[in-house]
Length: 384
Image (tube, helix red, strand yellow):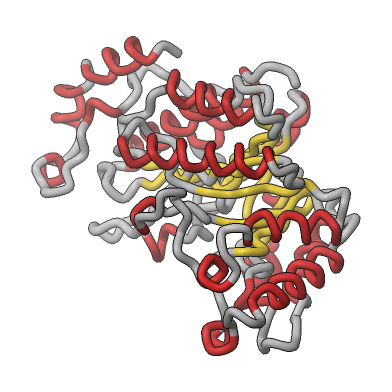
């Protein structure tokens, strides 16, 4: 879809939304700007009843979602929905350090193993998230790590975890969110304990360790804040691209970039041409691309569900229609499947107290316009 046409049509809705949405929302400090919505004439009609996962598979793609053991094991409706809609799942928390490492000398794989077994039983692929991150670290970590033991600690953790799932994993987010331009380094690297105690080569080291532990696993660098046409996102795209070029030049066994894509329904600054160029540059490095954590934040959108759901759906479809045109993109995972279980309820709540609605299924596991939008994007994607 041409960007100029899209925004011209969005602007025509200004007066319509002024009458449809409540005046309090339109005049509040965080007022929704109606120029960012797609035309209301878009119907978001998805043909047939086929699941998103099957639509993706037809095009040579994979669709899935993040899940956690507690929700999945306690709610049969969620389990049934995951089984119906997905072909791949990723643990939301269970493979992060603070879940896996109760002490510096022990591992607890039981929650993650439960999820891996669910995937195996239901014929789903299983992703790993994440081996190296600056957050979700156990309390003992800060007290223990130093320049003398950091490299060994990294080696032990990655080797143990990756070998534990070797042969049963689709891909690993080996390093997560290593770029943070606000930290002021010329290379853009985030100041983390790994950087402090090992040095900038910790990223290369992590990928090499993972490759040795499981030579068949797809190894991914995963990051956020890459989607929009803003100076911040543009600078981060450049930093991530430079990081990947550097790793490839050294022969590092890295196979893909993961783009989180936590999108905002009230954000208009998406430049399809610039983002497509970025995706092409990643592909030119002989890397695959996964959309690893997509959802659409609706905290600043009107409370009216009909309006809100349409904006969220448009955000999904407009973004994925660009992303899926890049042949290097092989998978899309939403960060959750149902609005009943989303991290945004806690971390990005609405000020009016209304339930957030960022995902394909509502809190009662019914398909929403967002589901239709994702289904349409897969239906219209070129064949892999």
